[in-house]
Amino acid sequence: MKITNLKVYRLEIPFSLAISHNLAERRESEAIVVVVESDNGFTGVGEGTPRQYVTEETLPGCIDVAIKLGSQLTGKEWGDSFGLNQILDTVSMQLLAQQNPSAWCAVELACLDLFAQSRKIPLWQLFSDTPVNTSFTHSAVIPLLPIEGLDVVLPVVKAMDMQFVKVKVSSIQDGVRYLSHIRKVLGPEPDIRIDANGAFTADEAIEFGRVSQSIGVSSFEQPVAKEDMDGLKKVTEQGPLPTITDESMCNMHDMNTLIRNQGCSGFNVRLSKCGGFRESLKLWNHALANGFFCQLGCHVGETGILAAAGRHLATLCRNIRYLEGGYTRFTLESDICNEDVQFGHQGKAGLMEGHGLGVSINWKALDKWGTLMSS
Image (cartoon, rainbow, N blue to C red; front, side, top):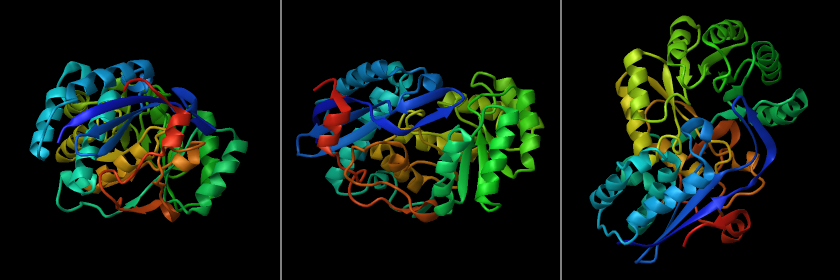
């Protein structure tokens, strides 16, 4: 089979609630959607969510790169998984793809979806005959909100009896009050972890970790700025909580630097940040092989495409410490997928059903929220 057509859409969907953390405030999604068509009548879809403060990608730049990378795949022919991986490797190893992981994520994911659909198998089965996991427990994620906003979100989290909750924080004094209020409302049962998105110095993060211990916090994600590797190592060594690195780890070079320096306790692997499905799985296994734990994260504003891809990736990942994703109905005014890729009570979800990603595009919604940038 071969790709006969590749389209790139710019996607902007309003949020149902403004989403804030230390590095950004968002009122709408920023993403690209890639649609590929084959000579044997199949259609595959992929999504990338560029975040300039993470990978230095901009949305316009991501679109341009996706078009350039996609043009190299149009007309290429393959007959099996080995052939497809060879073609994808040829492009993914280029500097352009490595410097634009969100763009490549969208293109690669569309190709994998296309091929899995043609084989009439779920996407995860391109990588393994049997799943590592068949059931999943997602986390709730609470952004920076005023107390009145918290009082809208927390009853939903409590009613769903979420077992894992990630809380965004940005200052010691406000963070302690914020966490105390959340713990009071949710009770002692949920596992609560914090994410500072680089808001603290190393000393502040160590202090905050010690203070927040009494509230019952399980781990500390990205306590210092992404480039502050020495600070991250200091918090890991001297702080009371396991540290998870997010913005500081976007690729294998970053991960190896942190592994070599013992600069964190675990890694947040995100499809769009880490350059797609295959590279994310490689990073996950590399971290575990070196004695580190992993969280499977997501970017706020992901549609059902990346939510489904995250579930497929989770199907293949061993020892998932925390799992995020599937927030479309909580964050976006509308999705562009016909299927509702969501979790249920307590954050529970099962294997994705169907062929490929298991989701299909609602073309009316894509026309409403998306702008075709190439064809």
